[in-house]
Picture 1 (cartoon, rainbow, N blue to C red):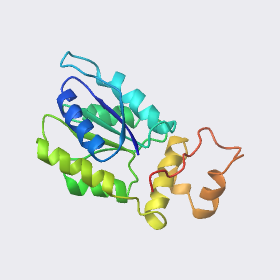
Picture 2: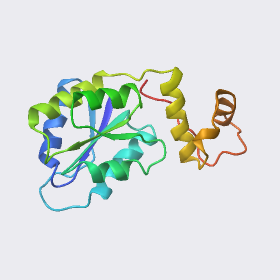
Picture 3: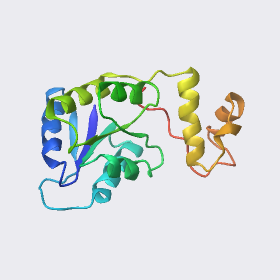
Length: 179
């Protein structure tokens, strides 16, 4: 599994601990910075990490900043990204199981080291419940990315609209990777 890992200056120490945890799990880590406590702008770090996931260069990303909010907002601007700010093991599991989150965001100023370790492990160990209502809802998120009203989605037009050659498509609906 390949994980893009990024943090701003307030999250860089947490990022280093997560990097060790990922290596212990046998994950390949793409360190997207930062590597110091010198002030930096979280969008400059969130964007390349999220893009790496959207473009298939990484399976997932983990982003860390002081509150986790800035990284989450930035990552969710990248089409195909479903970033979740998680504060405990339950939100980590639900973000994967129900929302097929492909980016985990963490708050370095709020969460303790052991809790972060457990959140990361829970998030990585949980798989998406593909099919049924959860998959339908994730596909509707893809419709929103394309500027379409999700309430107009149904299984018949959703499957046709997500396929190759859809004349109404402005953005591709990414495959439900990580499931």
